[in-house]
Length: 260
Image 1 (cartoon, rainbow, N blue to C red):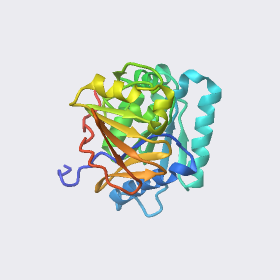
Image 2 (cartoon, helix red, strand yellow; image 1 turned 90 degrees about the horizontal axis):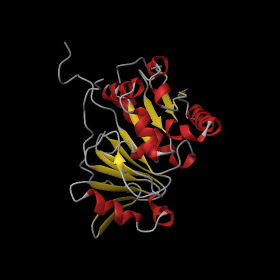
Image 3 (cartoon, rainbow, N blue to C red; image 1 turned 135 degrees about the vertical axis):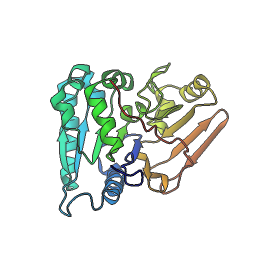
Image 4 (cartoon, rainbow, N blue to C red; image 1 turned 135 degrees about the horizontal axis):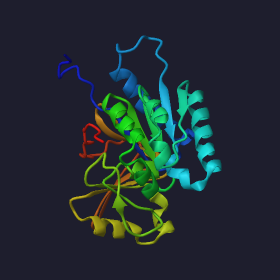
């Protein structure tokens, strides 16, 4: 029987504002993979080849050209980092329920959701075999990262930076809304920041993440990695945190077993 002390804990998480699979956010990937390697020290042989799963479902409505671009970009990016890529063509609810695709998520060191439509990715993944596999791998220690729509889906509510209204997300975090592309969001839709803050109420944390920037979890908490800032937002208050700074982000990810 596995003792509580030796039981695996959920892997680290990154919420990225933009720039997935690009040099600007390479340090985010390295930080996640380093944390996973350190936590799994002794669980693998010294020659263990780390593996990253790429899931482009958020862009599934944009057609095969967009999906293949993300898959190819991600695969090339991880090969450059010496990481084995597993590009998964999960593009809708049907492919998210493909048992063969979902099985390839098992044992990954990093699972990465690229950007697109935040409501679509949440609807496509919810209750699927693939989402169950993601949760199981994350709880066993795999890192979980999402960029733009992929970050928004991890909160309790999600919505487009360009449109009004919020809809249910996948709920890795309770009472959280992630606003990616935060440095440009007011140019997309003026007043959007205050609209979101007023809509969710004081119990919900609103987190702004600038482009080419990530809020990254490690063994010490949450750090800003990238080119710009992360923001904690509340009515009448905006607190910014620069690269290298720690963010007093006290939202612990929910540790729960996937149920169908």
